[in-house]
Image (cartoon, rainbow, N blue to C red; front, side, top):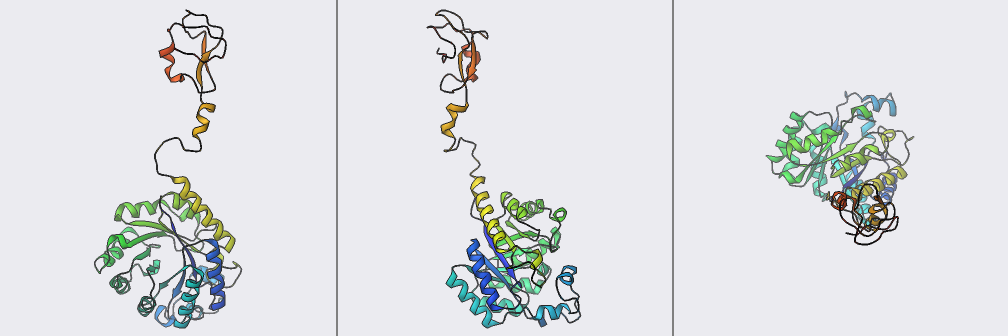
Length: 334
């Protein structure tokens, strides 16, 4: 299988601090991911002052503040974006970000991002999808909270506004933080692949690393996972994120899964070929056999090593006449 693209989702776990964001870049690089992803938005264009928080946001943030107030503290301005992109380039890790409004699409495009990541919440946002498609860059589209029809509508919007099917990857996702294991429905990723004939991946919000590793074994080409420097920090996404050592373990596990999947051909591997004669058996004499005696169930058996006649030729040996004398455990010859 090919190399899985691994995206470390910093999101808003920088808590509005550029220094914290740079430390996250360092940790993502150390973990071995391909991309670190942030979020680009203007609070005034993303939520109204009347928008309620999600339950997980209420649990993990100041319950007295509105969603608008929470989001406003987490904005990154254009200078912050430029600084983080430069820092990523210096560290040798790729920067991407999810835009959450039309102006943010233009901002990221002007800053030279190589692809767009669309969050699940935008899957029914026609003007947004149309504008991203018209930029002509590859798109990764999360499909949390959506059904197959809504996913088809979003994909059609992208394809009819300038993108080719091979430029789009659909990520199966569940938009609950953390996602209960019973709600993951990982087989839906394969449903997306079969229904739309596009590359698929998985955006994970479950605790731990088992589910994204399983997704890679099932054929995910992209894995996205939230991470944080410390799960106990205040903020909407920290508790459903991996800490740096966990992120590193996830990357290592995914790379191991890529190795073990192989090419699908059922053949002895290079490492095990040497064990064939040791582990397999041959037809041998079970007692002394004199020249001229007939090989029978009573005087032959099978034992290691596998350097003689294969037991699969058992019926071919039975009834043959011994051309020489055999002692017990001698390899039979015909």
